[in-house]
Length: 190
Image (cartoon, rainbow, N blue to C red; front, side):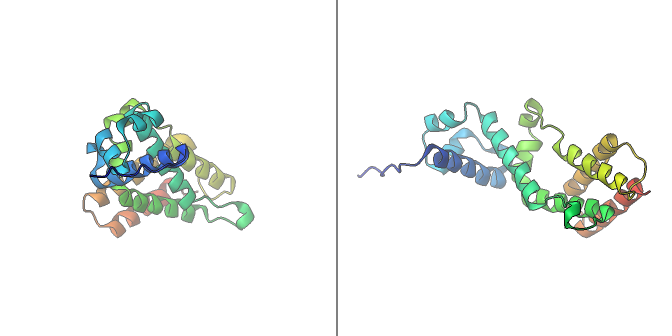
């Protein structure tokens, strides 16, 4: 029996193979995935895994960072240079985008945002900071009322996240997003 020929890859490519294998498995199976599953999927030895990721949590943190960056790249915030911004419509668009993105990455989200990993390595309030920045900019444009941006962003993001969870559990997506948009408009009205 011939041994399989080992592919020579750069360290960056090998690391990316491990990350992508983990993402595929986490998307399909959520937080039930383990190191052994990832190395089998990536076709690498367990030692190779630990060369790039000293702990399982290090890999999950990398996957989470990539997921957040993927959302930011897919749904960038506009700038005034592109023309006038409809701030209420922007908040609604971002909320709907979050719901849809979350649903499309459900297994990954479960593993990196709703598992014991998330408790051990909490994510900085990226979504809240992003939403608070939009609220502040909308206030400067006099499109939003005089709310405190940080706590308002935290509460509104909780509602956005709950809408995604409800749709994942079977609620009608359009009805949930419509109700969410009503809530967002009322909370931020001038």
